[in-house]
Length: 275
Image (cartoon, rainbow, N blue to C red; front, side):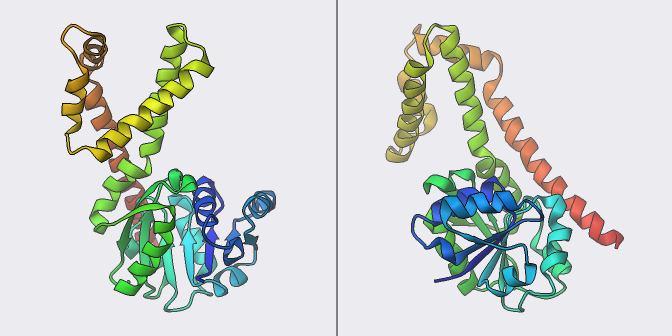
């Protein structure tokens, strides 16, 4: 069984661990962060993983190292591990916007690197994860990464140029859905439904709509029109969304998130060029 070391113990690390430990022993997973020992203890208690704040131990014991820190901390994270990384050791980066070229430059050696963009639905084995390999990653490395992320959901391999879009669409995507559910819950309260009645109805509606989209070849616009009777309640509601340009607002939301991913990567590149 492959040994996996995580650098960073935030929400995405926990979501992945929660998913992985449903099918693999937590003892095969080691976690580290800079200084929050209580967080590491919590992860050990909940999922049976091991932890260390000894970087050499963390890296030497791993078949693959997963960088799960914020993009602004990329240089610091790589600096802490690069003296212990083996030439053939697979590095997987979850950092939005940070290119494999930048990571290679920071490591100062040609390790196989794969960028991965899962989402927090990994915790329930429903992540949508995109993988993008560096020029030094082989088919075997892609297979290794795929075998890990397939344990927590769907996996697609994309070009690195597409990773900014993936980050904005599926990486951040659950937050957009949760935001819509928040609004539906507020609406339910306003129209007189108590939470214990409204919440199950909202969630089942979301699940049912998603299942319909997966099970039928019909375009979402067709499914929408099938519900929207002329002069009916759905038409009245959709009319408000159209009046406020809801679809274009969502397009702008995802476009802005894509641009932000690009900005994060450019910021690190500029930092490296100054050194």
